[in-house]
Length: 192
Image: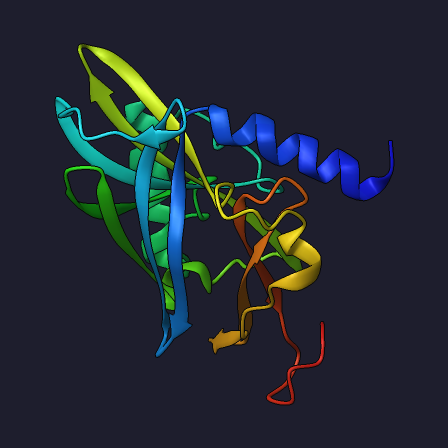
């Protein structure tokens, strides 16, 4: 099988799995705005959820933060107050989602990804989360139903900058949406 045939096969299999199908991605004005439709079994799904949808961004590179005891949290707060440092950025970030039946819209502020402890390069995977019938529902955000496999090589979004970090949405090999952040060493945008 050639590379293109493999991508077409991946797209066909992804179209049948439940996911959050992207209609539009608008990276501008310090935000990344995503509009889409919830898709189950290849068709839009407007079955109500128990708890409204939430967008979760998960870093591939950041380690899980340890669960701290009350005494450790208190000590950490004291140390941060004295040294004026912030706690490390969590591995998962959450953003609200507005939905109307199967359609959804969410906005990610670029400044929320340009964190004080930004890694030299970091990749964030996007998922929609909700609860339906007492069960958790997790859907990967991507674009699979447009008959255009291989978006990683075709679709390019503009970079946005905040606090010395370049933020760029991009499609993965499987046509899912992710966000790449890269620390920059100066205003010219060269990599750190």
